[in-house]
Length: 262
Ligand SMILES: [Zn+2]
Ligand SMILES: [Zn+2]
Image (cartoon, rainbow, N blue to C red; front, side):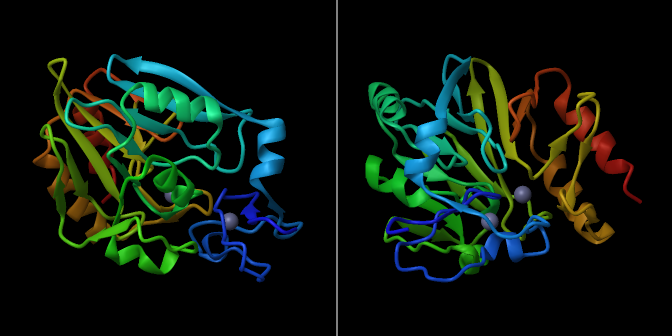
């Protein structure tokens, strides 16, 4: 294969010069290598069978997913904001239709990603839209395709424009974060990736070191998450799966879920 390899299990894109046969993200104990071994694909192969499906969640929020589902299957969310749009999380396919759609909405001023499982082909997105990617310096070792578009942050908070804040929560990864959008149509919104994982019942969140491998967090880490979330008020929360839109009492449900960890 003369083009960049993309891990078929997690969707992470490696540079052309990468000659290894293992995926750093999947070898980590928060992910997994399939029983039948490491599999690779490429952008060319993905685009033959998949497209990006765009769905309007709210006037200023658009969900982007690879359809049919590929690899982890997370969504990215385009946040349209007056002083500059932000892409929250990343998906491993960027097609022409999506580029046109985002440009029509004003392009991207920044990309922020909750944690390394969604770094995917972030370099392609950043180069296409000529914008920085904000990543916590605690996760530098998981960047397999370095880019001069990456800007590291090290504190617990990045203040963007229009009151938008990137907040480090920790847990799943030390730098696992959420994006807080204040007063969006009078609703405060949290985009959480899988920093919190909303159940299919829509009544519980789990917080884990590894979701696919069922590895819990230490109680002291849960306590840290509780302390942080107590201070963040929000009316709606959007997780990494497309069904995870919780618009009714999300903070109550989150805090009650965290209380179950003792
Ligand atoms: Zn992988
Ligand atoms: Zn994850």
